[in-house]
Image 1 (tube, one colour):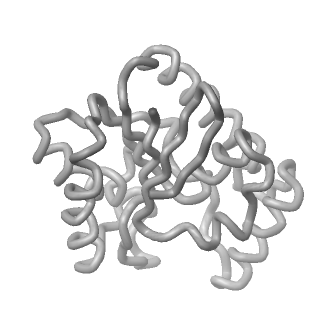
Image 2 (image 1 turned 30 degrees about the vertical axis):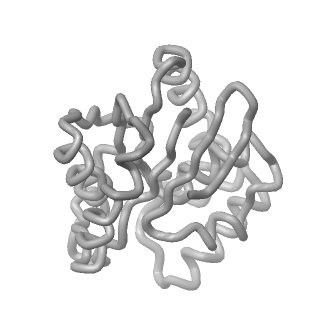
Length: 179
């Protein structure tokens, strides 16, 4: 089984680079609460986006169960420069779900991100087929992978995916279940 974990709530600060954003105090509590949710799943391997808020989300669980977190660059968020406003950003994200080739200047298209993530998950799924693994990442990255498995997963599902979230995926059957 693969358990996809979306990072906990973070602090947005336009002066802090996206890769260095920290968890909010609520996010820190959420990260600790993940221990109880993930412990019964017999996780044997943890892969994570290299972004600070993602690593900080999964670190308490990894420490509690004595596992190392392997940072995987392919699990980083979709590349997107800052927008003029939240509304502009959301409009671009929505359009990127409507047209997977849509690519404003400096952005990675949904298709490019999906290909990158699916290729890496496939590699890890083959390598760790007999293990329960965690892939800790970001909402769009997780959602684009889930869309590849089930094309009914789209903008609305991405938008409603909580922080944090745990989604169980069986690669053999393509079954998806939010925990």
